[in-house]
Length: 213
Length: 215
Image 1 (cartoon, each protein chain N blue to C red):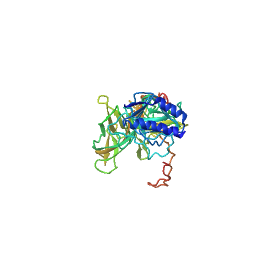
Image 2 (image 1 turned 180 degrees about the vertical axis):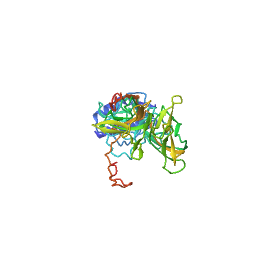
Image 3 (image 1 turned 135 degrees about the horizontal axis):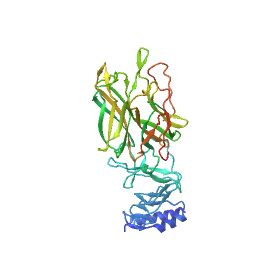
Image 4 (image 1 turned 90 degrees about the horizontal axis):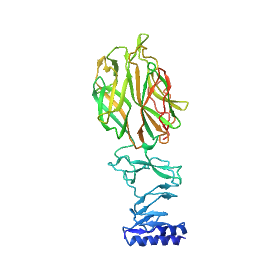
């Protein structure tokens, strides 16, 4: 059997050495490349590229390649075209919240599944009337303003409000919040476990553990 | 004679010899098919059983260029990363904050987000800066630190200020050095924008926001 293989190689060598510029076509009589497969190619074992070129600083709008694990046959190589995906690895969404009760977004269920996504908040805007300071003993309190995303019941939620003070009920304009949420797909972004460090009253410290990267 | 018609020969020989190795431009093939040159696959390519690689460092992502050539991605050589971080430092910014700044970053190509900020008294490392309303001493005004697309210019602008307020030090208005941390995603590589979502809270503190389609 091996002999037959060698014979084939010899045949190929013969053709190729008779013409240094030889090209081989499969399914085509007019190959455009050293090997031109006019059709599908299935590699059952490994694929190695000896000299793969590298992107250069003029290249733009290239696409990431991915391997599909549920194609038939398995392992189809496809480009990741985020424009045609409903969910990209990173999704950027502008939100506006209006007709708010005073200043309080206490709990907005964003509905993103925490098993699938990581959500981050950016571009935060507080638009509208100020909250008034209130007397707290001999001083005036500014309360504590919070804007955060958090997970509850496996869904991402949003809280934006002054937790201790409220907008006055007669505030003329009210408040609108805007923010850009970044929704990362966990197929590409890892949600690492929480790192808890007890500072025991001090104002500096050292990590109790390093993220397992 | 540049073109060789080997289609039937290869099929014939391969079918009777399962262990055969074939070389193209290569008399000593070192794999089942060893092409000493470039390969054009005109339709689908399937890798049935690639090895898994569990270490991110030492590997490169594969990308397809607009001319269909497959190359390796190298963030040190590419014009951009999939995700890019840049710190903008706005020195000696007016006591009213940064009202408008054109980053000149293309809104077609990138998504820009302000993910952090801080400020110091201009030209110092002094953190002793407070916020004071210009309207009333009892007002606690809201921050706005954000990037937006300028509708006419088509570029990303950033703004960073506190509504109707000035930055103060020792009961005097002060200029500040404003530090803003921007994360810039390349549009169309691994990131994309979705449609804006407006949530009418209907005068309630809790609500379920609509989910974008497909999530």
